[in-house]
Length: 118
Image (cartoon, rainbow, N blue to C red; front, side, top):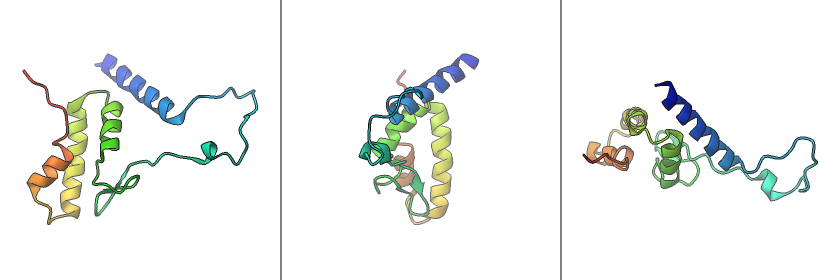
């Protein structure tokens, strides 16, 4: 079990490094100006905004395609753990949006997960 946790931790570290960009040496001065757009830009977080459960990064229905990709990387391909997390989000969303049909909510939160075929 410990090996799986290390792999997930390593996958999260790699994902954070890719999102943050190249790491600069602390001893070298930054060649970009302080007003550089690259220094000011922060990618949208793609977080849910209750009670509408729209994406904070792109205003699509959460989880948006970008967040779906990020979640698959963050959970390191362990769809069982990801399904538990998304199930908790589904329960919270159904409380915030009681008019949403359960079949639609299930498809939105869990329908995109990859399934194992035996």
